[in-house]
Length: 182
Image 1 (cartoon, rainbow, N blue to C red):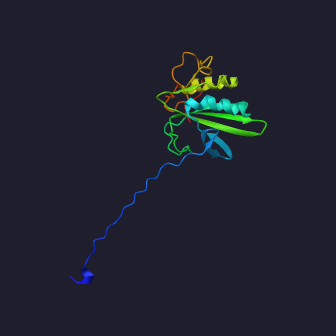
Image 2: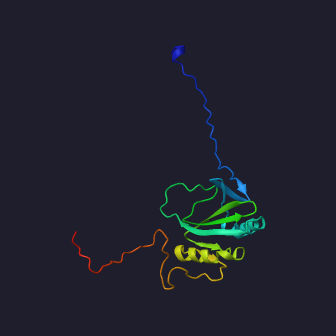
Image 3: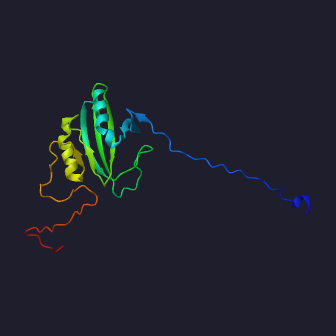
């Protein structure tokens, strides 16, 4: 073999870099994302009431909204911080600090296998009806709520109409005096 035909045994060192998920940014002790200049906190269910209590002490005295979301079949990204796993349901709460003229939104993930959340009634009594509405429409139970009963649907109604897997059904409607000829 000539010198040009000789092959040298070359050792190749393979470096495998383990990329860890970045630590999420924290605000008030909870992971935070930002949406249109507004802080969006993502607390764990067990920290939810304590966080809202801390925010109230810091001037967020008004809860202007509490609503439910069903993400069943939603394929797009949900802008959650690292370490927060997406669940089927979400409870969103908007708090306002009138002194500083700021808002903060809380988005809490609620699993379909255990659709329960602690109630904010002891911290913000004004959430009594919004929590009842979320229970009525989505079936998310609020533990510690003083009167968790249906508010929009009749008591004998079965199911929760705003769940994405709720069968809408069809009721045929007939109008008087309308001919079917077009």
